[in-house]
Every structure is written in C-alpha cells, then in structure tokens.
Length: 477
Picture 1: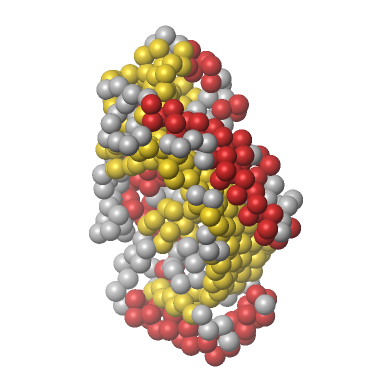
Picture 2: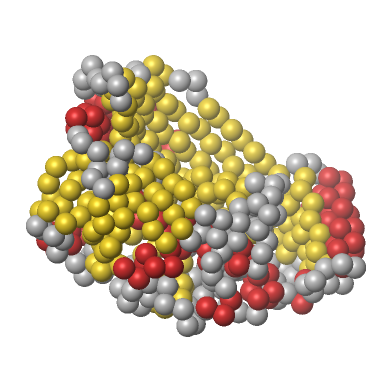
C-alpha cells in the first residue's frame, strides 16, 4: 500500500526546488486490568500524509488523509501555494537548505511479535500481575497494562529519496497505591519509564509478576516510612529518575529551535545560547551525553529522521563540555552550526520540529556499591512522580516515588515523598560519580510534549546511576 501511494505522489510531483511526502501509519492496542477488572480494549489505526514544498526560498506544507491521486494532488497544490506566500516574508532561504535524498529501510528487530501472543494469554498475564499487586488491604488502587504500537512510515523526495521505516513499540506498566486512612502513596514500574522498541520478548526481561510483588511491597513500605529529611548533601539518582533529569535539564534546553526562539511563546526559551557551544562547561568532567538513534531497542531509534537525515551517534556533551545542539537540518542551516538527525513529527498531520530522540548519559566506572560507599550523608531516589522547571529550563524542582537515606556509606531506611531542587547551569557540574554498565538501564517516555499545535512524541533515555554533591533535598510535598 505504501509503495502504491508513494508512486501516486511521485507521478505528479511539481517542478519546485524540493518536494517530499511523509506517509505515516500508526496502529496500536492497549490492554489494561484495573483492580482485577479488565478495562475496554483500546484500538487505534491512523493513516495519512504530509507534503512539504521548498520553492523560491519559501516553505509550505499540507497534510491529508485523502491518499488518492486527486487527494495527494490537492495537498501538493496547497503546500506549493503556501511556499509561494511564505517566500515573500521568510527570513530563511529554505531553498538553500541542503535537504537529503536518502534510500534505505529500518525495522525494529523483534523476536516475539505482538501478534504471536493470543489476546487471552496477555489478559491472563495482566490479571495475574493484578492479583500480585493487591497484596494487602491497604492497597486501594492497582493496575497492570500493556500498550503496543506499530509506527510505519515512507519518506519520498523529489530527488529520488525513498526511506521505509517500521518501529515496534511496547510499554508495560504496573502501579499500586496504598492508603492508611490519612495519606496515599503510589509506587510504579520505573515511573512509567519501561518503554522500548521491542516485541513481547521485553516481558521476559521485565518479569511482570516479580516486579508486581516488589512494587506492592514498596508501596506499603512508603506508607509507613517518614518523609524525606530536609538536608543539603549527596543525591544518588537511579536511571528511572535520571531519565527525567536528562530530559528536562539537558534535552529541552539544547533543542536548537528553542534556542533560536521558536518555542518562546509556548513552552519557553533556554538558558543556553549559541556562543556557548564549544566552550561552555555544562557539567563535570564525568558527564558524557550522546544522541544515538542507532540503538536497536531504545524507544526513539530510527535509521533516518523525518527530514531524511541519516541517524548517527553524536556526542552532545563530552567530558562536561557542550559540543553541539539538538538541531535538525533546517535549524542547522539557520544557526550555521552542526546538529543531529532529530527532525521529527508525531504523526502525518504535524510538521517536523527539533525533538530529542535517544539522549543518553554514557556509563562511567563506579559500581552501585562504590557510589553508595562514597556517601557520608545523602539520599537515594527512584522513579519520577512530579516535575517543575522554569521556562528557560534552568531552575527546577523534581519529586520521586521512593527514597532511602544513605549514612556512612550504607543504604538505610526508606523515606517517602523525596524531592530535590537545583539549577541546571550548576547541577551537572556537581556530578561526582557515574555508575558503570551494571547500573545502566534503557528507558523512555511516550509523552514528551512540544510545539504549536502540540505534538506528543516518544523519547528514549538511557543512563547509569549517578551521584551529585551539594543538592537541596526535602520531603512531604
């Protein structure tokens, strides 16, 4: 079907400087069991195309769900008309942007396809996990779910480019909330962070029943635990909280369109400016951050971005020094600097913008025991539950589900509602320990929002456990 639609578009491409069709289809199914009760199944199937035209310095685009020859022709005319109109007022010469014309195929490697598991079998697995989650009368709400998505796209350009990509995505989730009559606490599977490109083989790694027992046990522990103490000391963050820390205080402030001012009226700006690249000490010498969509099982892996730029691993921050922004081919042209392959859209009816993909902190050399052992007074935190950050992505306050006090190099008692605050421009410079590969985990979120009209997109973050010094921490919020 995709090849047929692509051929229809190619047959009537206009004589312009550049023209492309991004055909996108997403099919998904969600199975959920809440409090032992199977919820209505959620199924979706969304198909359409986005046509982009660059001509005489202008840019125009038009989306359509009518993929007949006449529908594609009408959308192409609309895109060309907008390109002609924008050419009169554009501050960027879009015809001068070196748009690529790639060829290739990308597929998520899957050993157990979603379709290989009977629906009844998946429901039974979630029912069993639900039973394990309800381990005590004080567990008052609990749920287990699986969310599968197949995202297929075809990108065709006027220069002969043709890229076909198919991503298989699975998001397992578990949650348990406990109440003692006056307070409620919730524990979940990685703060909803176990989202990857994979088939049902991911469940062999996640082990839902084992995780359900741990989540239920920890929810009850939190109910009886004291609030996190107010202190300034060492903060040890698990990968499922590092995911949020990377996302908010490295990913968003380094998106080049935000730095150039595109997001200012909606999601804010950035404390980072163009002259900082190549000279700004973003973090300590232990901080190494890479943009890497080539990792096969991470949530935002791809072979080419949505403007046809081939994906490759690139250092964004190396030894703490800021090297390059998260800027797509158009933003690179506007800023006059190198970026990465991160032009992405969340569907066929949205234009591409600069988005994070797989943004990861590289492992260090310390074991988990080494990191804990180096702390005299601090807190270990897991699983994000709340976040707040200013519109320049600098000052922040984040909360976690689960914490444990660290005293004299040993993990001590559980504390609930652990929170911490900091400033991005200094927080990463206080990175004093980076875990090795044994502490490393591959995570992701399907819920990153940005752009007008809004786009919610999938982002991957992998990280080891990391240790920070001089952090303000508190509880009870």
